[in-house]
Image 1: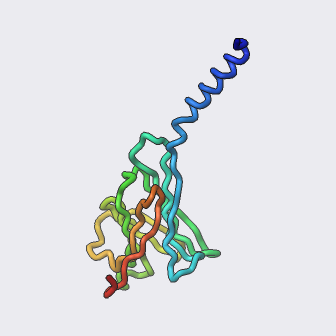
Image 2: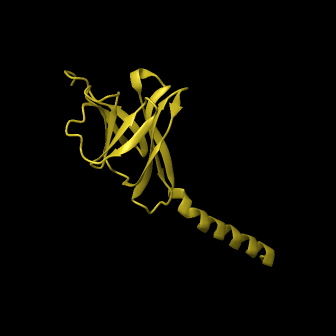
Image 3: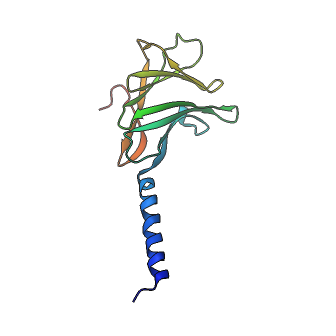
Length: 151
């Protein structure tokens, strides 16, 4: 026979499990592009989904050149399956620039001062494709573009 305390304890445990269930679907991960193979000079995309039923994520894009600088820009409410392509901008830009295309929107990034901003219009020629940030087996990864002539 159960005592009133045992029944109350069971009810509390069930309530805790019920309240924690929505957190089970939360997701937070990241992937980085290493500039010239240097882990101190990177462009990193951090992905956060705070509610399991949301079909969107918040992205934090972090251009980094350590120890000089590390800043980030927030890109909210991006579809979880959005394609994210990284490009090395053409040399005609004043400083070394990268473009990140997220769901058709472009963001200009530089590791000189570690800044980023939304590019109001498509740059036309975003430059050399470096790769994509994509979800594989439930985790965000960076897949490098194949070099010209590779299959």
